[in-house]
Image 1 (cartoon, rainbow, N blue to C red):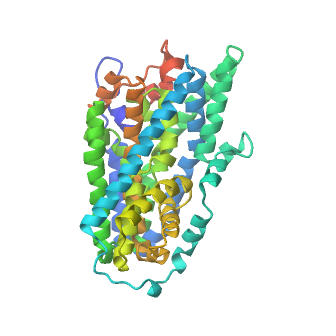
Image 2 (image 1 turned 180 degrees about the vertical axis):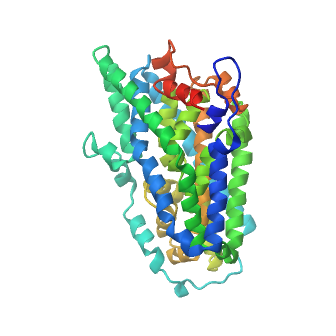
Image 3 (image 1 turned 90 degrees about the vertical axis):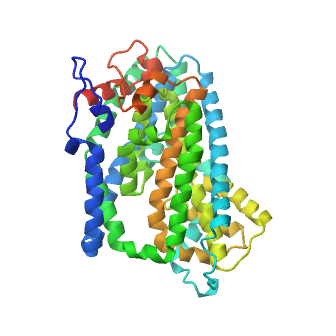
Length: 461
């Protein structure tokens, strides 16, 4: 995207500089500021702009399924050793389980130390639970068995039309294996998918030009509908959640990044456009195609990116996990309920399961919380009404933390798999990412169909 374009070579060994106003991250920053101002001073007008944000997110979701399918299927089909797929998946899930659990524990520890809900003395019977009834009902329908069965699509093509990430991933893996095992007879199919992926990633670049419009509409709606002032009454919880998430990113993920050989701050700078897009739209999915592309440019092998990123969007939700334990204890404290250490550990165990069962559900953070509280009767589900009004403001932080966590996870797993080009990673972290060459003797083996798309992106800057 913009970072890659800035570092593009002009063909004569010189770096071309793109004017600030043409850089995507600058455009998104301006759009967010203008949207916030409009929503604050003209709330009705800001609220009316909701379709702009929703429309952009729908545009991006439209191409998520083909991006995942093409990346994974062509990556697997062009591999030399099929056994590495299982190795990548196993290491990814070990990472997900470890850091998702750690995020839950961090949220639990901070809630006990800060106690953001202490002293509110709210009677659960006096709360209006009408607004949270939908989330509670959705949570009741979630189960681990149902979640696993839902990974299997109705037909081979319904996964693409329904847009379920894990269904698309399953079909992509099976298709990649099928193409791999039937080569060279299936080389024509692989070439066709490779060419089609170049078209899709060109489409990604085209759609990203609308990111400022989507961010403008989304932030104007949020501020216009809820107002900045609505944060005041529950500012302690919001501030605690943001600071806890920041602590997790800087300290926990920062240490992981350091041991892996890069700086978490350099990664954030490299992904600044995508992070601003997530901030503006409150949706990490809006930046998923671009994240996959940039991680490849940063030296992660395509098969690792294709497997880790989509599964991480369902199983590696660091920000959501911090929110769950923090919000649950806030509700308990606000309603005057004391939870023993055993009950708190039970809360963590239930949250570990429920966070997987509700993956991909609309309003997942709130649904997961409802599912967790329904299994831990000590904390009243009715207490969710206390945080419903500010949940939108915390969703941005959840999405940002989840996004950064998945980027770190992908680089770490690539390093474990010896599938990380450290020279490319260093260049990307230094702000001068190397565009993948349009012709490469190992194209099918390492970089895959994104090479031409990325090269053209650099030339067009």
